[in-house]
Amino acid sequence: MIEISELRKTYRMGDVEVNALDGINLEIAKGEFLGIMGASGSGKTTLLHMLGLLDEPTSGKITIDDVDVGRLNDYEKTQFRLYKLGYVFQDYALVPDLTVMENVSLPAMLRLDRTDEQTQAGSFEVLQKIGLCDRRDHLPRELSGGQQQRVSIARAMVNKPDILFADEPCANLDSENSRLVLELFKEINEEFHQTIVMVSHEDWHKNYFHRIIKLKDGKIVSDGTNGSSAH
Amino acid sequence: MGKKELKVAFLLALRSLQRGSRSSVILTILIIGMCFTNMIFLPSMFNGIGQSITRQVVDYEVGNVLVSPKSGDKYVADIHATLDLINGMPGVERATPHFTKGATLKYRQRVLGVSVRAISPNDEKFISPLYTKMVAGSYLGDADIGEVIIGRPVAGDASIRQEDEFQASLGGVRVGDSITIDYGNGYVKDYRVKGIYFTGWSQADSAVYVTYTDMALVDPKALDNAESITVKAKPGYSEKFIKNELLAYGVGGSGKVQTTADLLSKSMGRALQSFAIINMVSLVVSIIITTVVLFIVITIKTLSSRKQIGILKAIGVDKEVIMHNYGFQVIILGILGIILGIFLTLILAAYMAVNPIVTPEWSATLYVTPLDLFINSVILFIAAVVAGYVPAYQISREDIQTAMRS
Ligand SMILES: Nc1ncnc2c1ncn2[C@@H]1O[C@H](COP(=O)(O)OP(=O)(O)O)[C@@H](O)[C@H]1O
Ligand SMILES: [Mg+2]
Image (cartoon, rainbow over all chains, first blue to last red; front, side):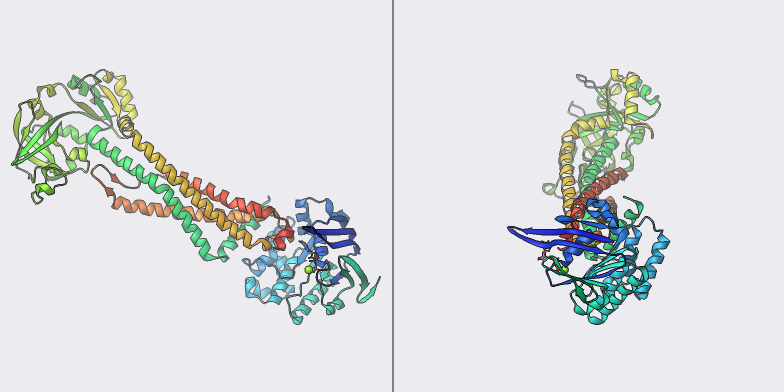
């Protein structure tokens, strides 16, 4: 459960102030597959980064599973990300010098509650899920964009996080690969009841989301279940 | 910093070196290796020169401990009793007297000023390898009278014209020839050249040797006086020990007792000071180059992967892991560079052992001790680690937003 109240983020560029987020109030239920949509520059990434503890809000409060994340120190935030959150980025962001297997197991290797065997088995399992087991010893540059994005999803999933964030994960993919990625998210969501918050600006992605919020100029302009937007 | 975090940092470092730019890794290791070699080369060379001078002084001048006349005296008196005393001391291999007189050599038309050194040939064998350095004829025997052995530069070469000579000589004396020695006190005597030697130590090579018995005939003072007594220590006994022993036995009463190190520190003190300054400069330059190179290499690495660092942090990798990732890279590069450097140094040392730089005064080889290698490795390693960790620390503290949006 994520609770957001009066969240604001103001960027200051010289004399100009940009209200990237302008008073966001939102609750995201556990197991929800939420789509954040809106035009470019509307504040989607900023919101996702706030939720993912990658940036600090100017004001407002975020509570994730009853933890006021604004009160966590730097190290606690890192640990929170490692144990509870998963990320998928637009440009895959795999470590270029690590193999597929190494990339996927990296977050699991840091977990104190995992043995080496569990890490190994877990990584293998998610690689199987994304159908890239036979490519596990390849380097990212030897894979196609779609395959790399699936690896990055596997990396986000390996620790079975409670919440998965994805910032335009399909932006660099063709529609075939985009569908594959979205199907994967849907499967994860249904199978493990993970909360998924995904940013997108492709209209046809709507069909996969349980609920969609639309941003404009840092404000929520619509909030509704699967396409039928309601205020 | 837990074990798992260090493990991940090490994995990231290793993979980055294995799968990143091969040429940059090789170049960095090469530069560290060269810096290491540079750091150790000059000091080792000076050390080698010092060692070679010391060895020659020991071999041809002093032995290990020299008993010389006390200030104001011309001779060490009462040599027979003193020699017996010293030769009876534990740790003393042999003590033997030296007596030197300036003289003029004459051979055909040539005249040459030299020092004539009187030795007890068989005792001298314990002190000096001179008897192994004969290039023609043979070494002196204890009872030889009217026989002389001369250095090759003194003998000269008949095929070189006098005006072309690098060093004045007798112009080609051969074994069996007769030469005249004018001792200047009205004592002129003919000698048969029994042998010609070459030691590489110019002081010895430009002298001639006769027996102590012979000298006593020339200068009766040599009967009971010596210009100096050279003392050789048995293996395992230090010069210092022998010196203290001599002093304890009262030899200090008949002469001044000094070790080779005592004598050299006086004559070479200034040279050693200059060596030390040059060594320091070469050391500092090497360290600066290593530090700057590693600093640049790691800075470029961190800056070109800022975004990736941001991503790693985003997925829960702690900043310490990021820092140690680069730290480990520098440590690995440093260790490989130092190993290469040690290897290069040993190759150079081996080469110079076979091809030393030879001058009449000394021959230079690289004198490298394991301690030198160790100390230089540690210094360079520390420099490398500092150079790597500074940019690594800086980049690891950058906030995620700045890194990810870069
Ligand atoms: N680091 C930043 N500094 C200044 N302005 C920023 C920064 N990040 C985002 N912005 C601004 O905030 C607004 C929202 O950006 P963003 O959240 O990236 O939008 P979206 O992801 O919806 O395209 C934009 O006007 C953008 O220019
Ligand atoms: Mg965006």
